[in-house]
Image 1 (cartoon, rainbow, N blue to C red):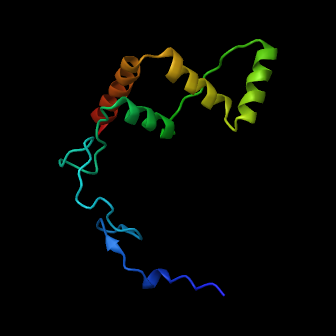
Image 2 (image 1 turned 30 degrees about the vertical axis):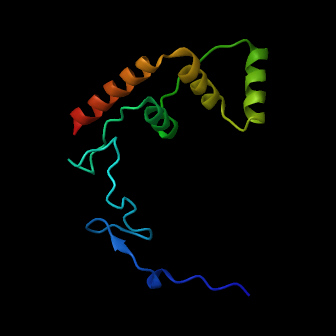
Length: 122
């Protein structure tokens, strides 16, 4: 017989905010990430490394739709291959644009412009 899982009430929970609790506590352990500063942890920090910017765009959910036109037989092949690779056509096109069309400087420039616009609204 498997052991019974402990109740949430039995776990030690650390408070990391005024009303915010977590089961995992503060996992920062006092370490400061090179991408962040000690200024304001609630404010988004500007990313500097291209790898981190690419990860940000992989996670980013605020995307905008646009249409592309392809020959029908190519469109069918792209859809079929994307399905075989367990991807969406949008993911395939985004990967191709990020890896083969835009330069790192263009991606960084676009990120910085969007970052500045988001912070100007605050």
